[in-house]
Length: 100
Image (cartoon, rainbow, N blue to C red; front, top):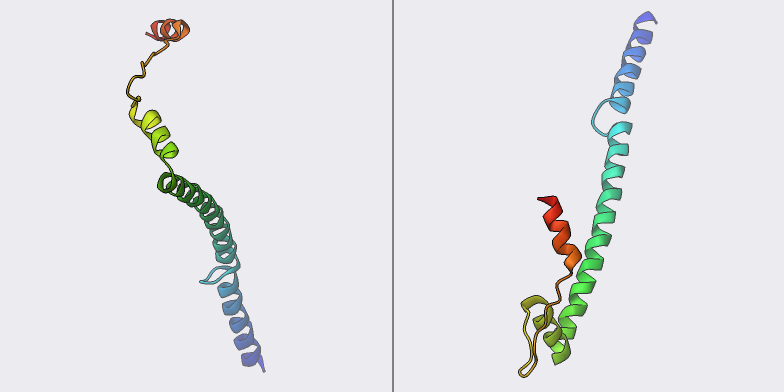
């Protein structure tokens, strides 16, 4: 009877070790749940980014207005006959001088 009790205690300790410390333990499950939550947030952010990019692609495919806007903003292009004026803010110059 004494041996049976010892065997049962050892088995209980082995099972408890696996529950708290081993692979698939409570701590690792909690950690994995945190990682899953972070990944879901990242996936949602990327889905929104993809949605915006798809909308931009559709706009570029459908009309010249989007292409023209992109050329003006990203490439600094102007239409024929237009004159480009750059307005320089004096406070920006003063700020840059003070930083040096």
